[in-house]
Structure formats: structure tokens, C-alpha cells
Image (cartoon, rainbow, N blue to C red; front, side, top):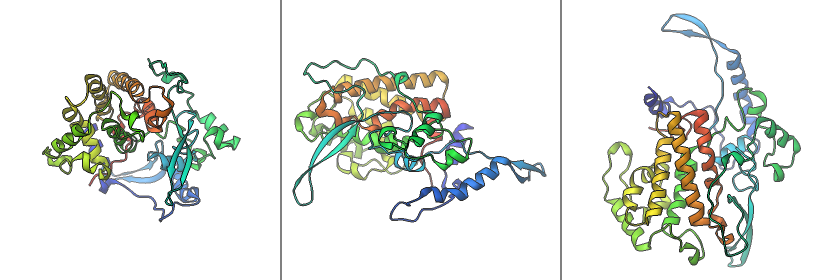
Length: 361
């Protein structure tokens, strides 16, 4: 039954659009678009007369909004959060970013610089001697609560709190909670976000400085090209979407479905003997954790397995690519930190396939 519901709830014929914000620019006041919706939700919260055709009798229909899902920019806009590039970007905890100066050339060839925030689990080490990260303590994260979200909004200091104001969804609907009602969407967080960066780390093109790409968690350019060729020769079931394309050539145009298939189905067989054993074992942990997190049915024991393997993968990730080296801070993106919150969301809402953004034809 759970599998059936998962397959049908995201069919386009079962989606009910409630509004459309005309482009090309985002609305200046998104809250004004929400007011008619909130008024109807308040009516449904109290109950409206309805008719049961099967039992042939009237009844009071009630509906409650308890979950809001979307990509990080969308959720940040809805709940007046600072956003994924801010000093305090996280919707789930009071994460504080570390500034990093990026240098670039503008369209006129002039040297410019911009300060970007990154989110390492531990600050960079000043000395050359660095200590490997042994564990990640999720329990030590300063988690947001409904009370702290309200207090941060009233403080009117988003640069210090990460909250600009309170969302009307939170203010007028008792069933909407921050952060429990806004879990992370796997389609954007993992497939469109993290997997792309992981591929750039595996093919050693992530860092601008070539010397920083000489880590133990990658393969040669020749091996990456061969991986892409092997991938293009795969003939997968038609129900999985389009046939795999060469990821070494076309990754920039990959959609979420293709990146999902690459991570869950093709990464491990294609990476075998192309990366070292420690890297391969880490990739196994990631694939197992995400596969289990998005499966239609989950037990409490399996959620514990997701947490164990995802935690082990992240420890390996930071030790391999970050190494507490200040030059490697750009690898510590918000998407990597957000993976730490995925298990908490699954514990609250069940499988991540119940709150992702995959509409289907």
C-alpha cells in the first residue's frame, strides 16, 4: 500500500496547483500570494461540509497543512530565512558559516573578490599538522525550535540569526512547525546538489588549484572518461527513464532523474577498480544510505542503519576532501552539512520519497 501511494501521489494528474507566481522575477511580497491559501486552510482546519458518495451521507471534512517541501531557495523565501549562502543558512539549526575570499575575473578581465561562507564541521587547522575528524556529533548541533524561530524573527537581525521575519504559514496555522514542517528535499539536496559536487571531486576538477585535487578520493581523467563511455553503453529498463548518457561529457545537462539513477544504480559498478578501496567503501555507504532513506517502507532499525552509514560517509568525506585545510574550505558546502539533518527528517516523516520534489508523468 505504501508503495502504491508513493507512486501515485506524485503523478501530475494528482497534483493540484494552487497558484502561480508569474516571472521572470520572483515576487517582491510572496506573503501576499499566500493569504488566500491560508484563509482556505483555516476553513479546512475548522471543517467544511462534504458528502461521502460511498456511504451516501454527509460529513465534516477537515484538512491540515503539516508539511512544506521545496528546494532551499524556495523554503528560505517562504519562511523568511537568509538562504543557503548566508552566514546562518540552515533551516534546522543555528549553523554559523566561515568566511572565505574567492578571487575571480569580471567580464572586463579585472581581478575581483567576493566573500563566500562555507560550513566545516571543525575550523581549519592553522598548523600543517592536522587531526583527522573521528566523529560528527549531531546531538551537539544548536537545533532551531518554534520558540527560537519566533525569537530570532523578533530580534530583527538576520545577519546574526538567519531569520528575517516569521512566515504567515507559521503565524496563522497552528499545524506548521519550524523546523519540523520543512524537511530537506532529497531531489534538490542530494541528486541536483551533492551528486554533482561529488562527481567533480571524483574526477579531480572541483578545486581551482590543481594541487588541491591531488587527494585520495578520486580517479584520473582517463579513468573518468572511460567511466563515462561505459555508462553510455548501459541499456537500463525503459521505466527508469532515458538511457544513460556519458556523464563525463553531459553531466551539466543531467536532470535529477539521471543523477538519481547514476548514484543509486551506476556509480558503484562503474567506479569499481577505478577508485581506491577506502573510497569505494565510502561510496557504498552513501549509496546504501540514500537507497534506504528513499525506499517506500522503513523500520526503526533501518533508520539507525541510515544514520550509521551516512555518518561514516561524511567523516570519510571531510577527512578526504577537507582535511582541515583552509584552502579546501569550498568543499564544505551547505549541502554537505544538510545531509546530517536527513536522518532526523526521516524519523519525523518516514521515507524521504514522501517529501521530495519528483512529479511524474
